[in-house]
Amino acid sequence: MKVSTLLTGALASLTAAQSPAPYTDAKSGITFSTFQHSSGLFFGLALPTNNTGNTDFIATVGGKGTGWSGSVLSSFRKAAQYGSPAVTTGTFSQSPIANGTYVNSTHWTYTFLCQKCIQSDGTTFKTTDQTANIGYAVNANAPSQKTNVASTVTKHSDAGQVEFDLSQAKSDKFDTWKAYAAPKTAHSFQA
Image 1 (tube, rainbow, N blue to C red):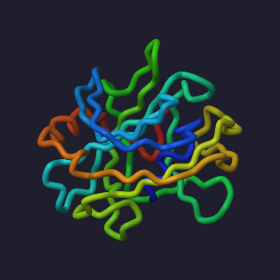
Image 2: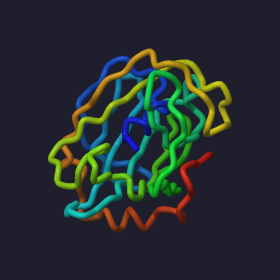
Image 3: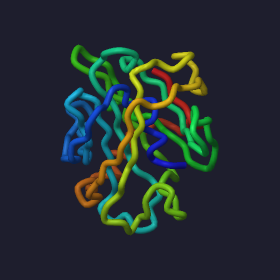
Image 4: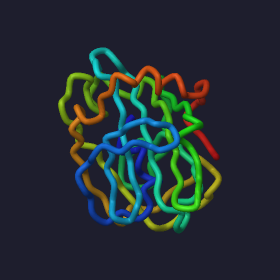
């Protein structure tokens, strides 16, 4: 499972990346190292201070409620070739964090605990890494079936990589934030 697959359908209209910076969500109180674009779309990571042996992270994704990005729908995807990435399965899972998942008058946010998502084979990043290059692929076109987590998505109109300084994502409050997560869900969430 690649972290870039988390971003494929979620970041709908990015055209250029900015450097990640700390961001604290006002509702959940979770502090993330966050990649934010001038369009208002963002992706953030939170990790424990001692990340050795940990395979979990907390992520947030969201943006302004423009286009189809106002609806929260997620799935794990893995691209094996050019084309719509298929839904993938594995031992990893998402557990939504309710106080970090909301829609208000300015934006939407989906926050979740990603369990067993740091892969020892390096397909995401290693627990000992100081930085992580996280790829994204975006398209302004809506998925073919907006309410189906397995819906096909059209080829991206923009793609890139963002380098995260993982030290900015670490917090000694991680275990507190992790406890906010709802029970595990198998590979999908819809709000």
